[in-house]
Length: 314
Ligand code: NAP
Image (cartoon, rainbow, N blue to C red; front, side):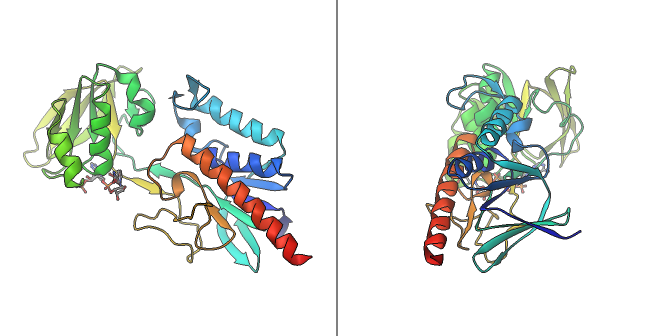
């Protein structure tokens, strides 16, 4: 049944960016509502150990996510389990319509829906996720010191991260389905010059295998010769693309060519009163630390917008 609920600041997506924005908005004494489809935490909730969030030398992603949510709720953030199906504007109001039939109406909307890595979709990938299958070299590279590991993909992300991983690993195989890389030439050259990187061309991963507790090897197939091979590795980093969850954003919000939302320094999009933070926003790196910084800025900017609208109304 259609129902409308009012608040001051609406947050769509309950990852680190959204929860941090919610904490700041609630601390500013605003009625802030965070709409999250699943459980709060976003991608961090399904990350193994986090070792690069200041103040926590090592904490599980699930625990950190819970801490973010509890902290925000303590200051008054209302978290609702809702699936948003449409975002739109009515005058100065910003609205989020949910699958439940409820529409939330606020004066500012912070879009923090994150993104998702593209999966290989091969046997063993899900089973060994967090046990040697990773989508984040910065987060997990240090767990594989002096080990032989693999990276899949031939784009900028795969080739840059392969280079980064050589700081830890004794050897990094880059498995690519063609014999030419998609990555920018300068990134390619750096990788070709790196003695720890070896390319496995024209090859795809058919399955990720292990001993039930961790990855031990990969089954590969050469797409030209159809020859099969086994590659002994302790980990596989999958970089076959990343998709921002920007599908719901209204059409007049400007995106870059890869679908990431463009913002100004206030995290405001091309539509006033709609802000974006975290992985869904176009920026250099996609880390929890960035997301919470973005969330802080978006919340403070939203608060200023509310003050301006209140001043205008008096
Ligand atoms: P990407 O450019 O889309 O590259 C994905 C790579 O994965 C391609 O080499 C592709 O092979 C391969 N691939 C796709 N599906 C596959 C599958 N099922 N199995 C095996 N391989 C598969 O993605 P990205 O590297 O994540 O980059 C995304 C965007 O971010 C790009 O615009 C990129 O330029 C940008 N980015 C920039 C930087 C930088 O400037 N420093 C760093 C990271 C990312 P094919 O080549 O055969 O299609």
